Length: 142
Image: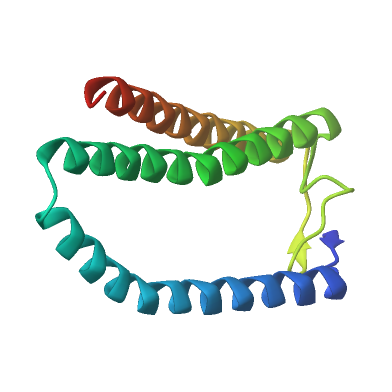
């Protein structure tokens, strides 16, 4: 049984990035409440056209911000699946992993590669739906 060895530097970078992301999200979440209170007070005293513009901007921005990670993850999963299928090895030799994993070869690797590609395609489709929804919202509330 072959083992694909983990890369300790990659693991450290990933955990540091994850920690920084959680910290930033916590700070933004704490600031969100105060910002929403100010925006609510401002929008309640404004005309309906201003409210509609704010909602349009909010929904379009939310849709596009959610679409970006879905599209990036989908493209990365598709790339992983294609490379694993070409090498008939999962994970591919050039990919870094966070922990030691067993290497799959031939048919098992091709099956995992096709599942990974399918998952990547699903994530790309979800991202595309979010982009289309954002375009529809932009057009609908124009």
